[in-house]
Structures are given as structure tokens and as C-alpha cells.
Image 1 (cartoon, rainbow, N blue to C red):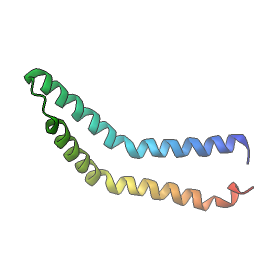
Image 2 (image 1 turned 90 degrees about the horizontal axis):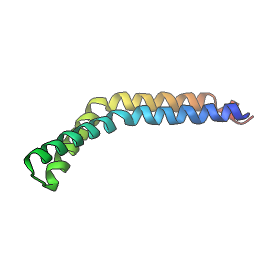
Image 3 (image 1 turned 45 degrees about the vertical axis):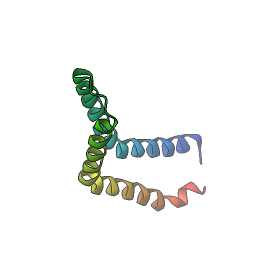
Image 4 (image 1 turned 30 degrees about the horizontal axis):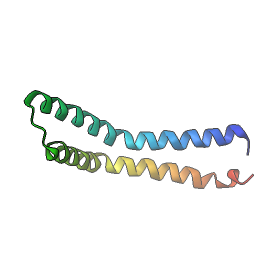
Length: 89
């Protein structure tokens, strides 16, 4: 197992992790910015005003993109297990 192989394996793992987490992180970021702008304009600084919409948004994204995320993780794991003999060399 060469250095290039290990780097490629790590790169694929990081890319898959970034791809899976991107929808949740993007929605959380956008909702956070919108809520912060609303709080700055109205000067209402309520903790639940930031927490509840983010939780609802994250749950909605998980419900919408959950099957795709699971399919991506499953295909990556199947690829790892299918090439397991190469990793032992």
C-alpha cells in the first residue's frame, strides 16, 4: 500500500463526509444569517428565535435529503468493502 493509495483513500473519505454534511450545514448557515439579520433589524434578541427555526430547518433537510445521504454512505462503504483485499497488501 503506497503513499498515493493512502492519500487517495483519505481524500475520498473526506470528500464523502463533506458531501454528506453539506446540505445540513448550508441550510443551518443560511437560516442563521437570515435570523441574525432579522434580530439586528428588530432588536429582538430571543434565544429561542434562533434555535427553533434552525432545528426545524435541519429536520426538514434530513427528511428531504436523508435517503440520498444514506445511499451515498452505503455506496462508499460498499466500495470500501469490495476493495478490502487491496488494502491489506
